[in-house]
Length: 181
Image (tube, rainbow, N blue to C red; front, side, top):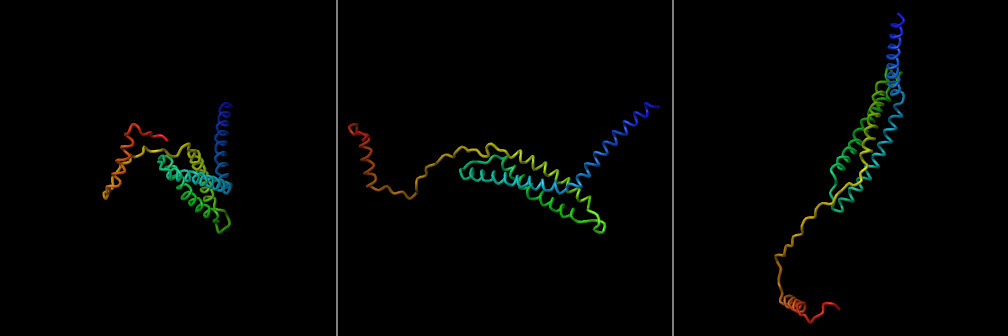
């Protein structure tokens, strides 16, 4: 009998500890939603600064005629999407969390929980984007296109130019003429 009681008490203690941890974590989401949102806003500002720096490098590279790596363009698109749509969604949830329920007597726990979870997920996504944004090089030089010489269609060969060209060519071919001065 004591063996069964000991086993059951250990089992109940383990389950109770697990349930308590889950409830405590969920309750902390409800209580600390403001801290989660402010942390997300700080991370998003850091992401915006990083994105602006990469955009400056991209503009400079494009002005130099360089091609931008596809992963840089992909990262910029993800950063733009994260800073725009996700932040707007969090702001909408924040407005909803400020509303009260039950005749304005109780805070809206569901909205606070959703807001806190969304802010936590988005903070992790922003952290991942910030880590991916550490580019060593953002562009590469492409193989230059060959320059084709196209003679003008309305070119006129004047006699004075032809005469001067012939004199220069004779002077170059003459072994008695020194080319250095």
